[in-house]
Image (cartoon, rainbow, N blue to C red; front, top):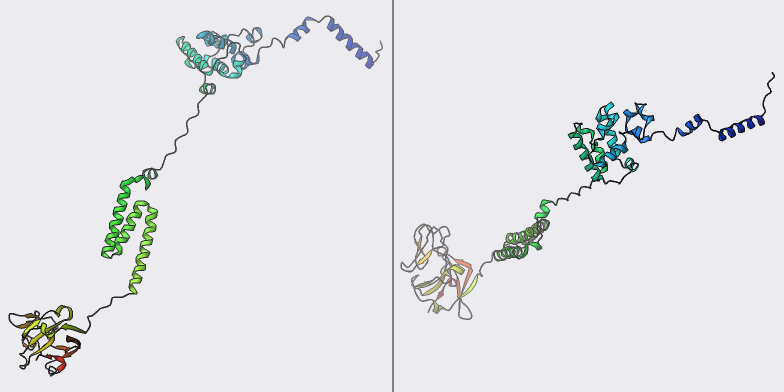
Length: 381
Ligand code: FES
């Protein structure tokens, strides 16, 4: 029999006829193949129990009624204290911790809980339920870790409050150091007392040290920064004052060489006046014992031995040097002690106004024969 090669139109017609026959009376195998994907177990069941997948006889027979699924475990937890780990067939076929722990974790995850029917539990309620299940499992002899979710799963379900920010510590030195304003009246009084005291002492004694100490004490109580600047200013001021003082050296002011000592009547005969000794260094003598002449003259109060200042002893009527004991008569002539010659006279005259005037710029020595000079004495009539 010779086969004729079918055309494209014949092939299409045959395919349409087969589809029409299949639509009119579907065979039992086709119906079974069409329904097979519908009765396939849920994906979460196989993921939640690896041991169940390893048992093919149980999985296709009744996947919805599997007692170890997430749905059954959650229903048991809501029912209050059931022990799902001990009632599942998978749990009897394999160790409990390996079978139940993944299931409970899946129940704690919100995505798995959303696929389970029933009221939605808060994380706290879920945690409490897990604790109850753990207690029930412990009472029934099951291992504790069978009903306890891993710590990471519980942490994911329970919201954790953020810890408070630590308080920034305040530096002790800054906190302990009060400002100048906070010291109050006592601090201001102390500052004023120290400063005024030092300033007064400085002005009274003329010492710049007290003034500088007062400024430094005031600045120290104000702030260390002010103290540093006050120290610099004080040192600069002292240096400036020292320089200025150097420009005005000490000057020895001597008394004038000519001075008036009053009228002749102020000096009685045979007396020695000490009135001008301290100020001008002369005695005024009125005597008639030198060459029998009544005269007034001025003796310089300098010992001719080594320059000490003798004293007039009125009771002994002599000048006595305290250094080496030289003695001089009222006329000034030496008579005892180491003094080699008589005391010296200063110039004396009667001024235009009738007053006696002493001139210390000239000296008259007896051993030199100068006492006979008329300018070395005033003769009293
Ligand atoms: Fe006057 Fe020596 S100084 S006795």
